[in-house]
Every structure is written in C-alpha cells, then in structure tokens.
Image (cartoon, rainbow, N blue to C red; front, side, top):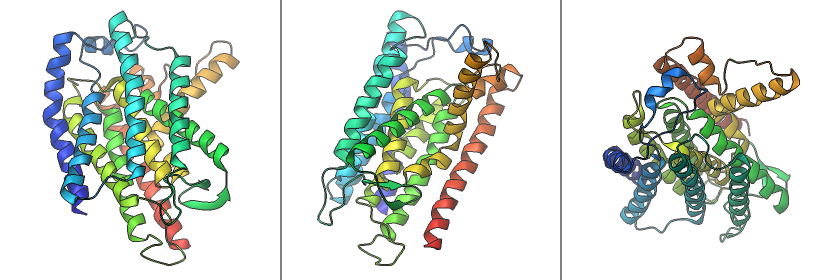
Length: 352
C-alpha cells in the first residue's frame, strides 16, 4: 500500500509547486480566461486569469504514477495505461479548445459538434482497447458484462460495451466541464471522487477472486494499480486546488475538466463499477441535469426558463449566494454523494 501513498504524495508536491510555475508561464504568454458576457457580472473580474491549469494536473498525476512504479519495481498495468491514454487525449482536445478561445479572444473555441465527435471517437477507442489484452486469468481491463456497483452476469457484448463506454466517458467529461464554473468547485469535488476510487480499488484487490475465493469476490484485472492511479489524480487535484480556490489564481480550463471527467469514467469502467459513478459523481450529475432541464424546458415552453441561468451554480449566484458559499455547499453535496456511492458498494458486497 506504500505505492499508493507515494503516488498521492508526489502528485501533491508536483502540483502544489508546479502550478505557480505554470501560472507565471501562462501569464507571460497572455493565456488568460475569456469570460462570457451573458454570465454573472461578478465573473468579469476573473477575465485574464491564467487558464489551461489542467496541464499541471495531468503531468503531476502521470509523473507521480511513474515514480511510484519506480519505487515498487513493478511495471505499469495495461488498465492504468489505458486510462492515462484516455486522459491525455481528452486533455489535448480541451487544450485545443482553450487555445482557440484565447487566440480568438472569445468564449467559443471548438464547436459543440467538434468536441462531441472527437470525444466520442477517443472514448470508443478506449472502450475497444479495454476489451482486449486479456491476462492469464482471461480478464480484460473492461468487462463485456454490465457493471453496476460491481460486475453483473448480464452480457452486453463488444459493440454495446463500446457504445456504453463512449456514452459514459463523453457524459462524465462534459459533466465535469459544466461543473467547472466557480473557483475550486470541480477540482474539490474531483478529489473526493478519486479518493473513493482509491478505497474501491484497495477493497477489490483485498477481496479479489485470486486471493479470496468467496462468493462475493471481485474479478477485476488491476484494482490495486488503478487505486495507485486514483491516488495520483487525487493528489494532483489537491495541489492544484491550493491555487484554484477562491480567489483563483489559475483555472483548469477545458484542458483539465475534460481530462478529469475522462479519468473518472475510465476508472469506473476499469474497476467495473460503471453505474456506481452516478452516485459517486452525484454533484456532476445534478449540474448536468440542470443544463438538460433548462434546455428542454426552454424549447418546450417557447423561451421560458426553470433556472435564472444554467449550469445550476450560476443560478444560485444570480439569486444572491456568494461564490464561496456555493462552492462549500456544493462540496457538501459532493461529499454526501461519495458517501452514498461507497455505502452502496459496501452494502452490495455484504449482501452477496
């Protein structure tokens, strides 16, 4: 278990001390946040704050994961490498989107269609590769069975699995992207969810069917190494949060939000707890649903709105809540969601 602590500690240090360097670099190049004119007026003071902070989150997590393996002397697993590949590719899409916004000096980068198509392609490739690379026990990184709070006996088959994984990755990456609207909100909520995956990975390893041949054992290919990767992302997000908390000195941008959403979805898929991502990422689900509800009601009602503004955090800003108050209360919701998810995971294990 030392390797988990090593990964988390190094990621925290790299992110904590690397973020100020990135802030200075981005500030020199003028890579500042572009603010929507139709957003809350309080956000206009954030115009020009360095963005693309997701770069340091990704780099810190990957470096820390690699260093942890140098300490352990064990090679990286296929499952973790696939998740890292997914994160980097989605991060590159977000980086391009951020760069276009900055270079054009407007809040629109890639079109929604362009982002969805590229995300879906990367996610589908991740799903396809995930059902390859069987180990000696015949386990692949991603199961072809439906996974809820654990793997079920319901077989989806390769095509449905790839489609399901693509939908999950695209939904989660955009969910985190929508949540990233207030200082520290997305990074703080992500830390909690990554820590939950650390606990799930460790538990699945301890109750692996290779070790414990009981009725409720887990058939997961690389749970302990996925816990190491989860710890690395939790550490990098925590270090970044030090500088991203209100008043933020840097934003993660789409570079970070799309990558973090991909990491969460990738870990849920490879740990075989796909539908458990809904309660674990409850805050991201709530905020995404607020946008869907607002959009559908606007179209059905002929221009009327449910919320003053979507995503949901901006609605509360417009009714007078302070930014820090919203972030703290939403963190509480995120924490309760994680507790619910872990409770469901443990309750299912006990009941088998």
